[in-house]
Amino acid sequence: MSYHIIKTNEDIARAVQNLTASCPLMSEAHKIAGLPPLRHHQNSYSSVARIVTGQLLSVASARAIWMRVEALAQPFDPQNVLALDHQLLKKAGLSNAKIRTLKALASAIQQGAVDFAHLATQENGLVREQMMAVHGIGPWTTDIYIMFCLGRADGFAPGDIALANAVGLLKKSNKRPTPAQLQKMAKKWSPWRGVAARLLWHYYGAIKNTKTETSE
Image (cartoon, rainbow, N blue to C red; front, side, top):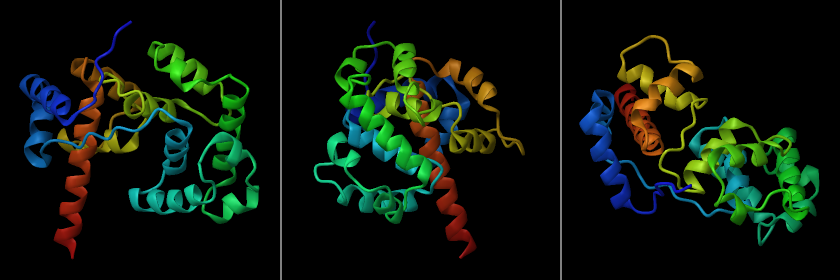
């Protein structure tokens, strides 16, 4: 099975052009925020570890914690992470649950249960199945991995709160959509749902920044 892969800013621009031509919400988000950044990561243990680290945190907090965590193991690979003391990782800012997840993923890689090069050749359903078999890896982490590490243009994260908040703002609704509602809504953005997500995140960040500047 072949996929549209997002590799360059030109890919983002082409996808946004398609999205804005067919969806008023995408057009409004683009008008306010402009083109979203590429956000492409290596298909590696380190990249997934960073995704896990940043879950449910602000961008600033996630970046600060990741810098401390990454500095503990150079190179940041499964072998070195498995050798790290639990309390050392906790002192760097990771929760107990996230530490268990990073170590479970490292073990799965060493045992051959997760092979990132192989995952890049698999359809999304199989990617989800293999990733979510690892303790602590859930739908959100897997969806973000598919979008940013595999670069698949039609990946989407219906459980992401920021995406739901962005759609709620665009629709001028007091209620953000549920994951099921967002999943259904996103069907019309296919085969560029991953770029639609990037645009929604970019729009949400722009709106939050505007509100902060206005309140100061």
